[in-house]
Figure 1 (cartoon, rainbow, N blue to C red):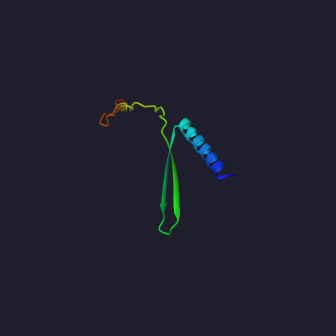
Figure 2: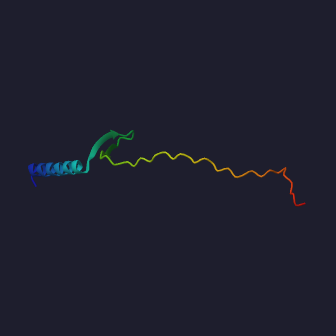
Figure 3: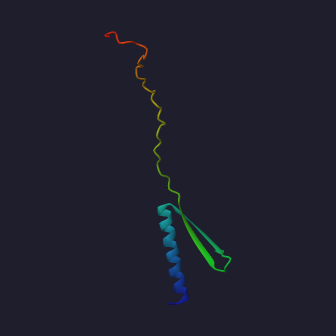
Length: 80
């Protein structure tokens, strides 16, 4: 394969990837750095920018506590 053909094939692949990212609503971020030990580190991040619907739940209002009838401990049993 000639260098021109390789370049053309490479450009076609890049264009296909760009089209796919547009359809998927994805952004690509690439970073390259050299580590302290001298290695080249390449990082590619794919960021989804599609807006998703969010269900908003209304805050629940706590119900008032139900009070049980109080027993009067001082009452006497009249049957005695």
